[in-house]
Image 1 (cartoon, one colour):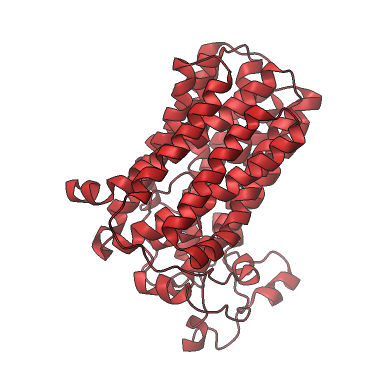
Image 2 (tube, helix red, strand yellow):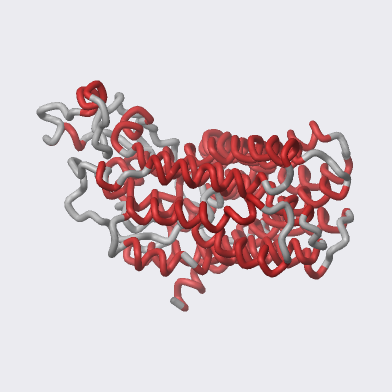
Length: 460
């Protein structure tokens, strides 16, 4: 472990500084708008713009890296993100803030892609699990520290924006100073949405629901907490404790995930989330102790949904498609995270701040209804499933290249699939047992789809 830390400390430090800045910026903007008595809809829109930028950056980042190389791409995006952060302090016009938030998301996604491809290039095959864990710890720790800065500096002045920009300036130093040869650029891997919608519909539903919930949490939980009467320091502690819950739960989750049916776990966690969020959804005002306890419990389970869905989907997708699966999951998550803050912001505007947790309750119950363990056919379960659970970093604190660090994915597959052209649409197979006769006809596998041809499709 010491050798891994010594080898990757520069990239971990870069990730840490990025996430400190990103976590602080999200909470600062929510609290700043709350202090100015701006509608929650604008707060949600800002977070939606950030996630839209992240999704867009996943498509454009490859092109930039291929054109100018990893170090130049990282330096360019760090500079642009820093300038966009400071732009929030120069302009008070909210539509301009939407554009700036999208730019921040786009630039950060490119930075994630540089770091992840570099980590994968330097990691030995037998070390990728530990390297991935270190990256996850750096991601969550950065988000927590970003919230704790508000405890030490509760004033919502321009100093906090300057501190965020400082973080993005410092994250540039270890990458710019590296003496290692940067990795060869990887190209966007092909996505096969129709194939995955038919093969792993329950996993995609879970990822979409997770995006709706977690995206709304990051964007609107600070606003909710401030409307509960919490001071800036208390909001920072509340957000920090909730994000810390996401880190704490990853290792117990891995133990459970490798021993129990993952579809059943998703359904149970979704039900637990609905129960934990219900008091906060019903009561317009709660005590500080109740808010912290229930907020922590909600976060324990809401941050479980995405990694469980990733592991569940990998159980039913062949190894040569897992790179494209990762890209599909992240895009699906990004769509949910873009829509969620907007929808929850509208509800909070018209019906009160407690609608944030009512929103969580509603979509958690949707997942309870949607996820049906007995309906999983296991027709396409891979030979060595269930695959070993891998603790995932905060869902969009990563790029489509995160598959390169996943020890479940062979490194050569990553290299092959991300340097080839997309394959034609895949055949239609399902993870779910169909409900109707029409769906049964659509979901039936072709007679020869288990042969070698079936395994030759490309992945992102």
